Image (tube, rainbow, N blue to C red; front, top):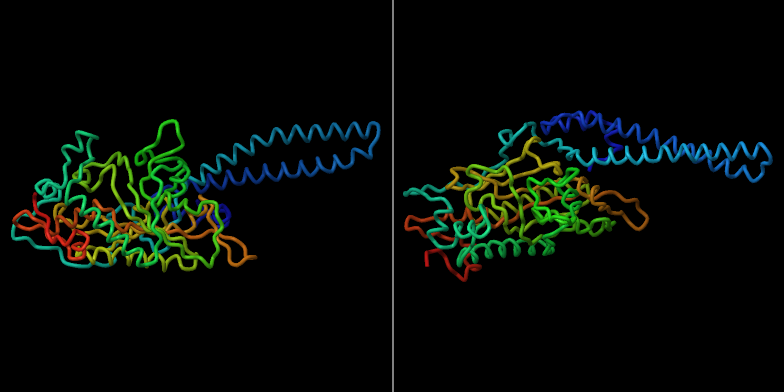
Length: 424
């Protein structure tokens, strides 16, 4: 959530932020109008209560008609307050809804643009492989190797579900273990997170006034929903807490299954493992001092790059434009990895800085010293291994003419020293 005081002091800055996202800046005016009404009502109510207190103090010393008149004034004051309080509650609720619907303010370094076509390639690593045979996509490869079964998955659960078999399970586990080992080596604390959280946790992390039901699986008749990423429960891990500044940064690695409805997805995105309803992920999450927020962002992106480079996968780092940012994010880098079956680079990793947006919505602050004031921490998140998408790149880039797949050397110890995937 944004800070009302900052909007009040510099509304044009926040209107420019909405324009950078390709949005109508009108909601800023609506917020300012509701805030003005709220403050006016609040001032009137406080003035009436002050007068009510004065009258209450005076009445015991009054007699006769003066006393009766003052009592009548007290009743009128009380009636006026009772009339105003519901109006104040209503406008406060309206203002809260407006504030919660506002997206995060884009960082000044975020490029202009309304969609992914305006994203900026920051750097590229590796060279896409050249094959002396017609390469196949991961669906064909995984099916022929007997490690992916989309037909039976659809039969059991519907489209975009699958069974993973044999070496496929080992490969997914190997990628997860590799990611966890990398992060524990960097001092991250592993966290197995809840996979059901309250609605307010999801909107607190991702933004918006209500759940995005195009993405989120909601549990009927309960205030619970399946997580779309462990970023959500990780953002809530220190909810309503005041952290000691000396403990920052706090870095966690979320280990969880994730669930997304992906309503509206179509085309090549819905083929195979690329955009499924259930997937496994290792997620980085940092709570940091605002002064080192930008530095932490580059650090997390660097870890993602090291992971992909260790696998020998050609990739590029892309800075997202304003129109392609998530609601809750101020700045995001994507890592797009070469996928022969898709004929180009496709997103495998994302790394975002939410600034104080998530912390303000979820009540996470820090204090400098025992007597210092409090302020909101900055939070950042980054995918280290959405195992399904990384598997696509490993299978497609490592495929060989005889139908086998050469495994990256870094995975061999995790695969029982198996260097290739072969059928049977």
